[in-house]
Length: 470
Image (tube, rainbow, N blue to C red; front, side, top):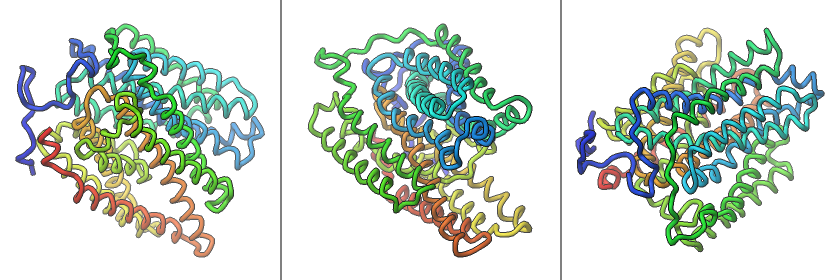
């Protein structure tokens, strides 16, 4: 049902109706792109998003062969994946600030170029320590590419309906990367060798870099309020503090899956991380707002806080796959139906799906319970992801597009890291006492509780009137 309070979609001619971005001199430079050029760039940005998730799932099939050839112990093999995820999530914020303060074109091209170099080198290493280091550096390079791609995307697609569709497709390519990563990685391991998983990433990066140099318009220099040095706007102290806090937090929840939540290094990392995070937010209130990595006013933008909490959910809800890609095309619905109801619909799908999966405890229940559960859950998680992105950029100034893109992607990564660790711990602890499907069912009941909390929070705290008054 359409929300009568939702503003009408503005035409291309000047109109007082609100748009998704605030095209002020502080926002991304708006250039005239032909339709062919715009959609070619969308494909390029989608490939970068695809490589983000591909860099994780493609290695699941390759880990046994890599462990055997390099002598990697079972407990150490998790760092082939975790090293990338840890640095990717941790360096998103500084990447977003660089995109907003400096040049998003250079940030994007540089990030993809360095990603190609590190991926190429990863295929030639023969020992575990260089591999772990390269995987961590690959995560930093990928973190440079994603927020800058978001910044460029909202500038290339200033018209609201097209922007919604572009953001949805951009996010959907992450789901495609999750599934195709598993398939392509398995094909390389089976018919070639594990280094080709890395070399494939390097090969895909080449056309992305080459086309971006010529197709992305020159970005105008951004002025700093008061005429100060740009580097001061990066908030290096604050960003470094939060980055270290995130590294420690993700390290803790990743390690908990193997060493347990009661181990000293997990507890110490969590405590230090929480203290540093609290220190970061206190520090941000003590410096000028235009020099803060996350200006305090960000959390008071209409619905920003509840949307940030919602952004933790899609990758926390684990079953998500290529079947969810068509849902990413529903972005234009946000101009006919208020995002609140779309997000509630997506969360409701996840709740129903989780209940079905909790009862899929025997082979005969695959088709009536598990299959529809995965389909509904994947669709619901992608629905939440797509319309959270659209809603959060609708309420955010365009001059903060890179930073907000980093915050959203950071929330997704945190949700994924925490979700996998907690769900794995619940499943393992239950299976120690009860055989069969009890552990898996318990993990789904836990996810049901998280989904219900998200649903209630969205229902209560998302304010339609505030958003539409913007």
